[in-house]
Image (cartoon, rainbow, N blue to C red; front, side, top):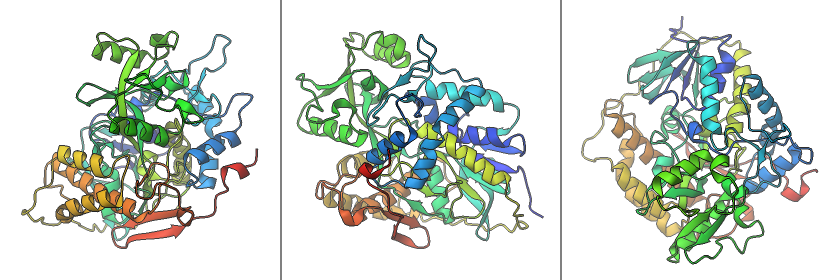
Length: 521
């Protein structure tokens, strides 16, 4: 008989984790494990909102069209259709939970505009506090109804043969018939990031070590407007919705950064980030000018308060730089969140569903967590396969002590320089060579070490897989830009670089996706 501490273990506490827990708690004993506190996640920091085609002149097919275009046609079309078609239903679901979205004076939802969206379709809460409001609302429904372990590090998946039967943590082993990874991304690989300090790719790393398949790790999205101080330190994200309301990216000489682009400041994120990057490369500084936005402090209260705090003589111009924001790749899942390992699910940014392609469309991330939480929970609740009796497969390994892992700062500096917004065969090869001495450490579980060492081990592992993936993909597409091959290559269209611990890398042809102009209107 299987030992069981809960019926479902969820690792993480962002919107994907909490919505999954909410949909399961009436039927299952749910345990949530998070390495900080339940209200610390990238979801809490989400400012923009949730994309949904709900206005009279909009349609889910137009939302699909914009998502495929932003994703450089690397998206899985069927999965992306599933995402956008369910968006209006997700807004109604949240409203039924008591979530209050911002409204216009006539009572209709106030919809924002963001980059690469052809229509206003971003529902938001308290201006720029959407993520925090959603997490607060969900936790209010969950508190006291789930088993919660905060400040608990999950460092290894427990296996019975190939089946995942639980997780080894800093507070002991916990067992359940089903485990859900909802641990977010790996923005801490880079010097400037919008991500929380906890975003060290733990879920991706422990899934890989357990044998799960990963994909699309080369597609890192850099948000073009991260608020920085005079030293270049990140002070927080400046939502893309600010540009949707009319803010402009200007150099210190007053020139528009995106003057050449047909969409101007609302071009896709990857293109805007590169434009800002090249401006800095040419010795210029870049500012986000918000002086023409009426009632800025009311529409964006969080951002406004941050500007007043850090810019005592603020004149409407915010110093910005691109920062690592989102990884489109991760743990390969199907439409119901199932990974390639039995009894292991993944959801949210840690998962690779194919909905974001090579570059995520703005405000599709909270939506992804909501849509796939519904599908995952339904799939899990309707399963009737019984787990086998526990027979724990140990993965403990004694580690060599000859090599010390690099510090986080050193790794971030290297990754930003060599595997950042602009890459090349030369820079990627240099990074791969630099990482080589650390790989024997990063591929093993080091739970006997400190949390800092464990996180650095995970970052080194993902850095290695990301670097190698970027070397293998000999083209530029979406968030993956190579200066030595600065264009899309037809032979690479719909090709995926996948990884698993036992098989190494291979490429797989996915079903053909129609180009943007062929999407039925």
